[in-house]
Amino acid sequence: MGEQRNSDKRKVRILLAEPEPGEARLYARDIAAQDPMYELASASTLQEMLTNLREFHPDIVLLDLGLPGGAGLEGLRQLQDAAPETLTILLAERAEKELALRAIEQGAVDFLMKGHIDHRGVVRAVQCALWRRETSSSPQSHGLDDLTGLFNRHGFERMAAKHFQQAQKQGGTLVLLRADVDNLAAISQAYGPADGHRVLLAVSQLLQKSFRRTDLLGRTGEEAFAALLIDAIEPSAPILRQRIERRLEAFNQLEHRSIAVSLSIGVQFWNPAEGGSLEELIRSAEASLQRVRAKRREAQRLSADAPLEPAGAKSPEPGEA
Image 1 (cartoon, rainbow, N blue to C red):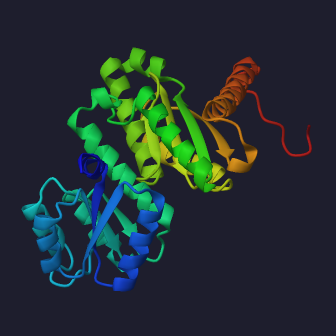
Image 2: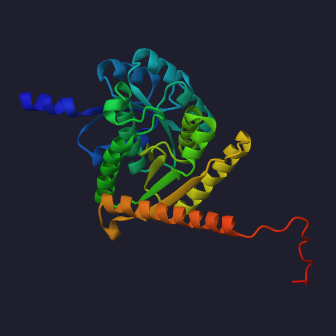
Image 3: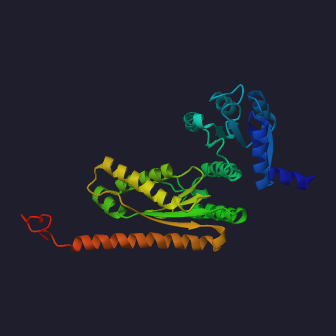
């Protein structure tokens, strides 16, 4: 009996508040197949959910926004009143996305779009929610950066190792992105250290807007950031780079600085067929970043060495050259 009680203490209790029995069975199957540490219960109405909150004491609730008796944000409100420490992940239809975003503002930790969820997505959302709860109690001891709230280098590498092992087991793919603020020192010198910190915060927020909530983000050095994209495809790498560059350009236009913030970005794709280790993936992403930085430095050198056009000189007309 003692061994059974110890085993129960390690289980994570998940309540599926989902009105459709077929959907609930699918979520339960997907979650249970991943790890025996998960213990599951289900509820198809608001009243059943509240009863389970009292009797089952779940760590996480997967809450359908259309739950009978608690449609919209009413179910979330009553859940939070009854069990304020319980983590909530919402299940939303595409038309309910705006409502789900409002629910995030009111304390839900994540949302999943119904019809676009696979078993990895469900489990990944659960794991991320548990990790957020663990880190929120003591940020420094759990590997969070004081300034940005992202993982620090230790926390990022620790979590990346878990995702890498899971990808190896399940045949998942990864994209590792490395980004450096090229001119942080120049900005801090020109505008002061406080403005340098503001730039780092802005870059961290820019990155968070560019990735999914279930991707892994970290500030891994003074001006260094990293992101690990879970179950990503190789063509997503250049798209992500372009997305970040567009957002950075918009930020610079709003700031009107004499020194625009500059980011160098390196990206590396990985799939299990390639083999290798997480350390090799990190080195490859770092090498990609250094190639980008080298090209940027060379372009700046060539620009500085280009002869200046004499004052008053006239550019040749077409056909004059």
